[in-house]
Length: 88
Image (cartoon, rainbow, N blue to C red; front, side, top):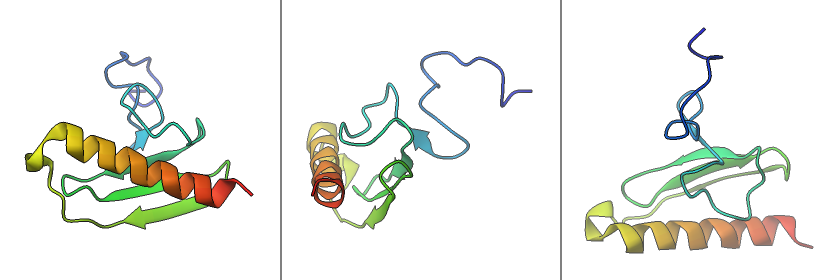
């Protein structure tokens, strides 16, 4: 029942082990059905079943270099991939 119980907004962006598009700054070009997870080294795995896209990105920019640089780079790369894979 813990899986189906209502969640607070702070944890609503998490699925069973993956982040889902929600309040935690998921890339804007992803559909609401997208899920994935970033890593501290600016790696990312993302699946968007609406657009039939799945990708993994491996990097060596660590979160310790600063959250803003880490987050902005991850969002930019993910949005570039989504734009290239979904726009004709």
